[in-house]
Image (cartoon, rainbow, N blue to C red):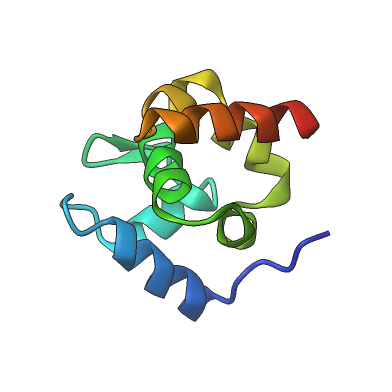
Length: 97
């Protein structure tokens, strides 16, 4: 089992990937924790896409709760990843879960 980041670490990491949206790290954290499905039109899948695209897998595992990793690697999220090589990498990771 992977240790999840503290709230302070989560907010710091979320801030890194939210630079181009109007959602605050605190609002994103409420989505991540399941308190809201979306905030300002920004959905959980949008958040997962930003997290998976923005960090190495090792870091992703510390941000997204283990029980949600399968959703975070859904085809909807994977299709939003860039570059294309990253899509193949995460399809492989998904196959190992």
